[in-house]
Image (spheres, rainbow, N blue to C red):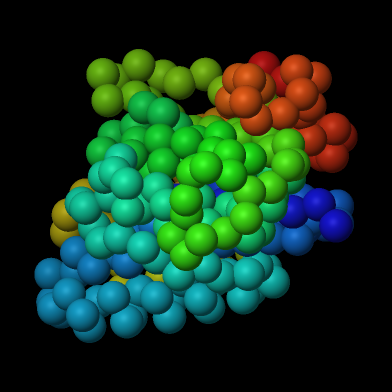
Length: 254
């Protein structure tokens, strides 16, 4: 069975940026894997770190279960996702165990470092999957299997310098908006935090507005998630494009 692994920084990033595409892949027969590198421990003005970790882990588990995704434990804390040896070895072990057909991860350029470092870790961990001399933690055998990596839109669709990021593909997520909203609603702890820290009046409305903005930009769909395919070298064949090949008329090339 083909599989897709979403690798994001924080609990709720997958819901905002990737979950609609995951649902469509599940409908096409893909097994789903869900991993946030960070515990999300700084995402509160009311509770201490350990309390927030427990709350947000359960919220993420609940969200993943709504779409039948396998949940993978976090390996870092907020603002401490660094491109470093320990998280790379840990993430590499998970990727070798899952052996995904597709990896979905953050944009290489985004509004915060946790997102960008998650992207770098995901890319290198995927690249190292077939290298037996790269030791993972725990030690996991290398795999000889291609993987195609896709980058989501940056949050807000703009890079840190305020430039719009043009996706290569638009995926039609209009039909799964209600399920995306249900998944994001699992992250109940984030409503007040996002209101206070980032001025989001309603994180549920914001998610739908971001999808609607990209849908309008596509000139084809009403709501869309955007993707760019990572260069194939070291990952997959030059013509491998399973997202395009699987989603048919639910995907539109820019």
